[in-house]
Image 1 (cartoon, rainbow, N blue to C red):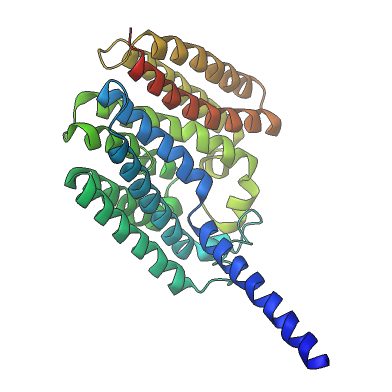
Image 2 (image 1 turned 60 degrees about the vertical axis):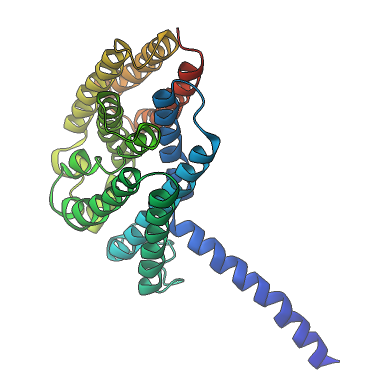
Length: 305
């Protein structure tokens, strides 16, 4: 009887361990980041198609983009394992806590990127596959391995990796890199610093403990808030300038103006009177801002006027 009970417990524990392992591998890919990147890629597709793109292409771009972004994030876990182990926000990550072996995470990330390149090059086009691969290489080699550990301007330059997905969406439809695609790239590029610096203000003690030279650690809270405000102005100006082009219509322009006003207001409040809660409000709004801005592009592509 006792043996039967023990066997039953083992049978229950094994599926539990497998589910836990599967969840850890999913965590390596950072799903919330993938969702945001996919939204920007879809926005680029709808603008390029001036309406609803081919659903098959849309599906493969989403699949390839998710694989590429997930693979890059998994490799990031491997490369940042020493830093993650020193930060309270990241100490429980799968690699930092050794629930997943570092080399297993690296192999997983490489495999996902190989899958992304195959999906996009075979079912979409070679340019979209090459751009996705370049985003991964820039993120893991230039940003994670070099910039993040050596300069407070890390996220300014490193933001280029996260700005590539809308270009991928555009070239998936058109097969070429055109001026609107570069606009989309630049919008995300200028969005990244105020978004990430707001987060850095919230967890600057973690970065200080890990020896990561994020801007608040190096120049302080007041200078960081000033930089956030300057980049926010540049971001909103750029989105409005894009609104004057033929690539978008009035739906986008009105939405960009309204969202931009909210972004600048929160950035100004943070600059005028620094507080952690103000940084948190800006950080959370910045996520909503980018998601809504690119979601509006779907409607603008379909109902252009």
